[in-house]
Amino acid sequence: MIEELPVDFLNRYAEAFGSYELEELKKGFSEPQPISIRVNNSKAAFKGNIDGAVPWCHQGIYIDERPIFSADPLWHSGVYYVQEAGSMFLSQYLTTEHPKVVVDLCAAPGGKSTLLRDAFDSDTLLVCNEPDAKRARILRENVLRWGADECIVTCSLPDQLKNTGLKADLILVDAPCSGEGMFRKEPNAIQEWSLDNVQMCVSRQRSILESAWDMLEDGGLLIYSTCTLNLEENEGQLRWLKEQYLDAEVVLLDTNVPEGKEKGVYRFAPGHTRSEGFTIFGVRKASAGSSRMQISPKKTPDSSVPPFIKETLGKGASIYEHMDTWYQLSAHGQELLRKLSRIHILLAGVPLGTEKRNDFLPHQGWVCSGRLANKLPYPRRQVDKEEVLGSLKRAPMTPWSKKGYHLLEYKGFPICIVKNIGSRVNTLFPKEWAIFNQNITASDIPDTFKLFRNT
Image 1: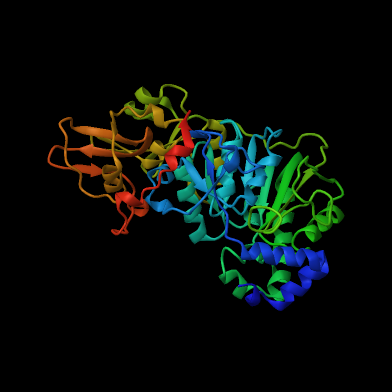
Image 2: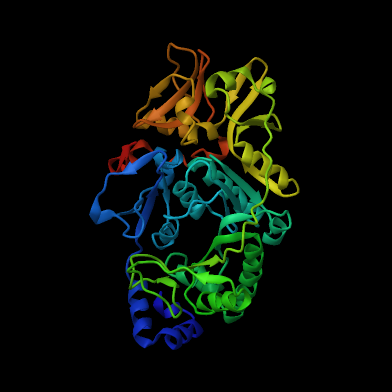
């Protein structure tokens, strides 16, 4: 694969970092790809195998081999996310932050969005935006699976989002880039790379950064990252930011991760770190008095909320209805949602379900919610590998004696809701999430459970 790398890339890398660093990168590219996952704090915890821990992220775990993740019920229920280890370094910027509103501006497929959601308390509102419609649908699915508590998923160009007047205390720009750090993981990135593409990415990134800076509150934190290695898309963008915005203060971290050519730029590269290629830096907008967006929370009249929800979640649950589906989202989130009225919204809070005649059909989003799943008022039914795989394939299940809705659990983790009507059992697991590969059997379910303990 090394021989296939673009000559221009190799020459530019040697010029920027030296021939020794180029040889180290080549060695790294020739090594096996590391495999890592990140545990969902709201659902489980890592047992603490020090040898397997990602050193810069407490929830990150290296695993020895790549299983069929789509066969794992714990992956389907959002107990963990398959994420490249270098990108987990984002967590290093979040430990001392207490934002009210966070925006992930280029969020698909959702790895960093789920990390952001995990890092903050439930009173932090997270807006996950993805401009590309197809990728935005993937983002929505991953956010739902992780747990959509206090999350709004949008599909919008950054400047359109800015024009709503949205303000945030923390903004992540995981910028579209030339993808040099993905050469080992995604060989197509080699074919797509060119000098022209690098320059196009630089221009696009600056446009996104301009929108992000306008949306950032005074005193707020802007984090910029790419999965590429060149100077133009990383150190060059930090220099440009400092020239463009004199109130930009570079954030320095206490870390062993190698710095780049600019102070405060942290670089991950095969050969130096157990990761793919990744570069990140943070800048803070100098505080000049509060410009915080004013929000006047409104509340859905309690009389309109279905009795089932009121009895289950209790008063003060901040419920609203949209297109016949009931959602849980704070009053703060609902008011911000009204501010985004002209933006394409794919998800806003935890979808609870829909009323149908005299029945209430619970949504998979409720099952996946880290905060609300334990309030589902249905009997728990523990299932084995064969049964849980059948439910994920939406296959018929053998009825049992007690009719009605049941929450299926595997190894103690909620998987999906089924309805036993006596003659058959209907699964409410989403069709678009179902396992369609009939060659997958129970023997393909990995034993990832051994890595976790319930919290």
